Length: 82
Image (cartoon, rainbow, N blue to C red; front, side, top):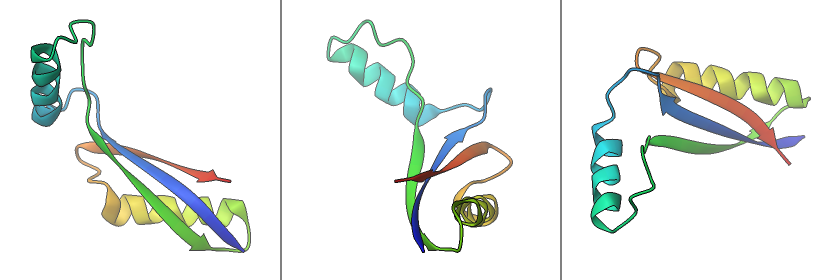
């Protein structure tokens, strides 16, 4: 069975995000004063052949921990989407 799994990777709390700061500054320059903070990240969409939804989520988590995310500075969440 095929499953689509979304893996969201973001920086851990306390890790500097210069790209997010630059985007935040640009938004302020464009007049978006109410946007207080911008955090950047990555989203990967994986199509996985697996027997169960749990197996697909496990495979995506393994892939994220080994390649998609840097465990020193990033965290990730894998979720099966319908």
